[in-house]
Length: 379
Ligand SMILES: C[S@@+](CC[C@H](N)C(=O)[O-])C[C@H]1O[C@@H](n2cnc3c(N)ncnc32)[C@H](O)[C@@H]1O
Ligand SMILES: [Zn+2]
Image (tube, rainbow, N blue to C red):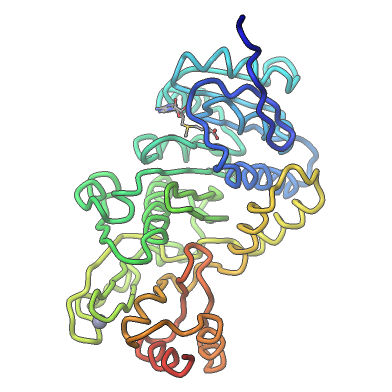
């Protein structure tokens, strides 16, 4: 006898997952998407909902949550796999949106975005949670976001973005990517660098709101602005890493200077062009925490709240992170307690904070020699 499909519940969404790809572990990215949408609509004076495109929707859980919990009043859920369409339609029907406000489709995202752009249909939030790198359709995706709206992108192409496949990185990103310990941050900055170049080429600006990874998927949410901010182009640059002493340095493409040789005399490896601006808009993350506290507590899980807290404590500046393991290697023996090292650097007047992106990493504007000296004292 056929069994009833079982329901899966997340936040206020109840749906059938079907047999396609779904990861319960990606929940923090979905929780944060809901909060971002609520933040976006709260920014506007006028009352009203928002139009959301969930372009690689799988079972439609994001689209459903944007409608149920994020306040979207127009929802488009699309997945290229036509076998998912009946499931998408069934899962999203309970949203009960007004006629014409719910669309479910089975196009490739490239075709769907192109047709939206032709029809001048734009969205307040475009969420593209696909496989691989979101590169072939990036200009169309930027174009499909209303000014001030949010593009929420995922890449699971860890090998090229972290420099483990350098030729693929060059093909996909038009950038050099060199393997190094702070590889999650490298991947996020390369992705943001590409988004910035695409947006600038179209006359737009970007404002990264949040960026994070658990080492498998690299996620960025950026606000697409009508124009670049003053001197935004300064934020595209290169980064050098020295395998011998562990130091990282960087420079803007507008002020290229010699990065090829480290202060220790060794040859460095260079990555970029990449984004050297903030990775998080910490004020916005503070507001997301307030929103999370004011809505149904089932919407935001504890790991999502912890992630928000961690990201809010590190804006991503200065843009070069360092690995505690590299410092320990320089010092010989074990690493210094990170909190103590950061405190000492701050007492000496330097910026210093733990990385919100990856564990056992930190960032400081102190020269590497000074970090090593303070590291020795902190042990
Ligand atoms: C990572 S899964 C989506 C998971 C879903 N967003 C979630 O949170 O559970 C990626 C989806 O993208 C779809 N997909 C892959 N390539 C696509 C394309 N070019 N256009 C649209 N959808 C695509 C796949 O069928 C798959 O369902
Ligand atoms: Zn060196």
